[in-house]
Image (tube, rainbow, N blue to C red; front, side, top):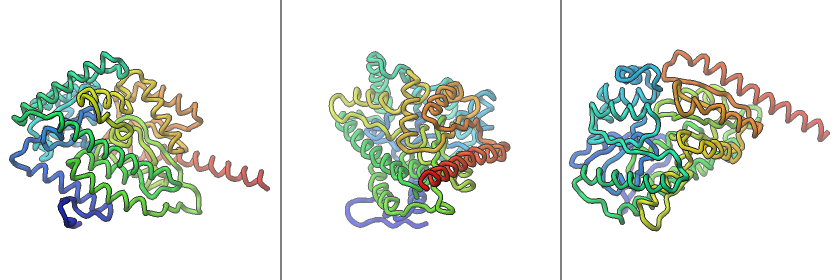
Length: 405
């Protein structure tokens, strides 16, 4: 798929459909690999202040490939079987010499779970790595002061990497552009509030990939073009005029390449994932960073105020945000998906599920990994879940018709 550039001072390519956007993101990934004369920084966690990476002038991208059992197996050589497959894949990418992972001069991680901390330590065997601390108590003033000090450490480390100081005005400019991206990506997600939305859950995650792989100022005009494309699409028409089953996916990370459940739901069963509450979906775009005042305190407050990971405390904040999304997007049911051995989302599943049940929502809990051996079981369980919701819809519709008659 060829991409043509627009005329004028902007260098953004002209994007008219999703295939062109995917090609654009792929081109940018290769551009990062091939780039010379510029420092490159990878990061693992969504609590990494991207505004500082932008202000430092480094090429940066998130390291969150997943879904490949061979890559996970390569990472298990350095861990244990009780580590989740995402952790193993992060390590496996370096062990296998993935060209994208090899491209980075340094990798940064903010400490969330114990297994990702271990991943940082192992990645150090292949690439210089810096692990920074993320306070667990998100609402504490002490946490916010401490996190500001960690962000300053992050800034100083980036300055050492590039050999150039980072100006406060550049940090503020980074805050502005990333806020613009977050607002726009939230608008993309909100297109799925429509009845029978044309934007699929899989397509939304493909759009989100750009946020993690493309330089922000280059990405923004491209996303604006793509938004106009999706905004103009007419709603999808389900069979027999029925309303599509609207599902939410909540839980642990659905990494880049891990699309099995989405493909089952949308391609094989004809349902729609209209919202996701995980750190590679819509969740990061429900917050912005304050654009005034001390930029480092603004980053500390903005990132701690973001829709929280289940690792953060109080857990009730994460649960209530998830419940709010389920109501806001008018979902018919929830797929609570977590990677096997996930210490955050596996352990807290009962609390999340209980809250969804309070809302009257059916929930299917799915523990998954990156192997293909359980695909048949996943299909059977999800199909039965969707059938129950569909039967309930038909029963409700029949009852309403009887009452009206």
